[in-house]
Image (cartoon, rainbow, N blue to C red):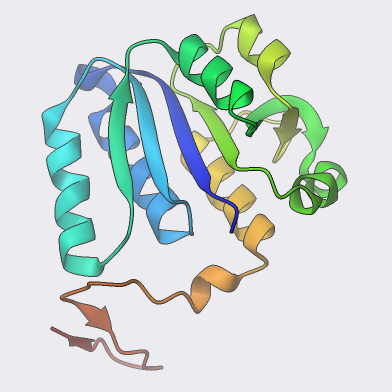
Length: 175
């Protein structure tokens, strides 16, 4: 089965802690296998995400890397492909079929700050969810939803302590 990881570029704890956490939770909840964060290491994010995985299930990994360029280069050398979500790329509906056809592991790249030109050059696919500025969280959510064709609504997470029981008019969970 194809592995999907998310690479979050340029995490800055003072500014991005909530947003980076939301990128990680979106990645996990919508079917990615893990997140790698480039930037200043932030143990609070690791703790928060690992608590969610512990309570709500997994598997899902979280780690930091010191060099996004080395990480991407090594990913490509190991046979993976890189999908960079950017408003400057090919529209998602046009690029999605080619991305789905490939059985290569996928690294989905989202930025926190201005993305270096080299990312565009290294990416296998530069894909836009829209040609307007939007949040990396929403871009990632739309991409994963489209990639998985809504499968994430049926996904069961292993090792969970808490499970939502679907109900049309009230909240109910099993723990």
